[in-house]
Amino acid sequence: MGEFRGCELPDDLYYDLDYVWVRPEENGLFTIGLTDPAQTMSGKVQYVWIKEPGTWRAQKKPMARIESGKWAGGIPAPCPGTIVARNEAVLANPNLINIDPYHDAWLVQLRPDDAQAALQHLWTGQAAQDALKKWIERYDVQCMRCQD
Image (tube, rainbow, N blue to C red; front, side, top):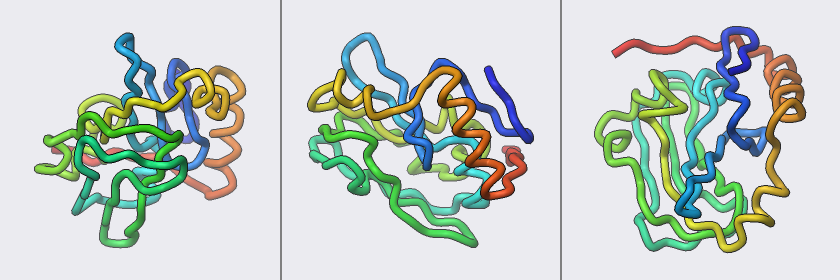
């Protein structure tokens, strides 16, 4: 796992280099969540809304919305696909995003229209680590996590 300025940057994930991480699952689904730098920039998450399962989303169209005391905005789909599950635990306790963004606080599971094409537009490995570090520096982020 990479780390930079207190931000966890798992090197086994794919990233859109803006807000989200993507973990391809063995069943062909993508589990998607908010990155550590993105959750830090948003502040303590107070409200989460996630599209219903069965909803198709175009790339860059919102699949979820989060609100904090200092920011509100849509979380874009990293690729076209259909939402097959949403994290009910995050809907009940939005602050989970600030506590464990890479595990308990995933947002959706998406069935991508074309998984291979989707992964070609995302970053992973050392290239993702380097790009995320530049993003963190550009926005002067120092990551921190909330507690339960």
